[in-house]
Image (cartoon, rainbow, N blue to C red; front, side, top):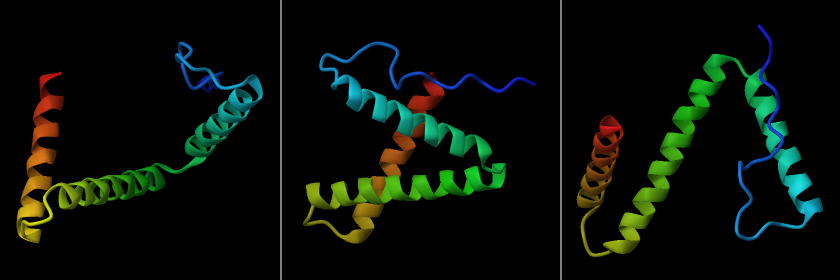
Length: 95
C-alpha cells in the first residue's frame, strides 16, 4: 500500500487575502508536520484525541451559550447544548 502524498498546501484555492509567501511556507510546513504526526498515531490514540476534541468543542459551545443566556440555570444551559448537538446530528443525516 502506497502512502498518501503529502499535501502541498492547506487550501485548494487561494483566499481573498493570501499571506506573504514565507508565511504560507511556514503554515504549509506546520500542516504537513501535523499530517505526518497523525499518520504515525495508533488508531486508539486517534480515537481518544477525537473524544478529547469533541469535549473541548462542547465546552466552547457551552461557554457561548452561557454568555448568550446568562440568566438561565445551568440545567437549561445543558439542555440548550444537547439541543444544538441534536440539531447537528439531524443536519448530518440529511446529507
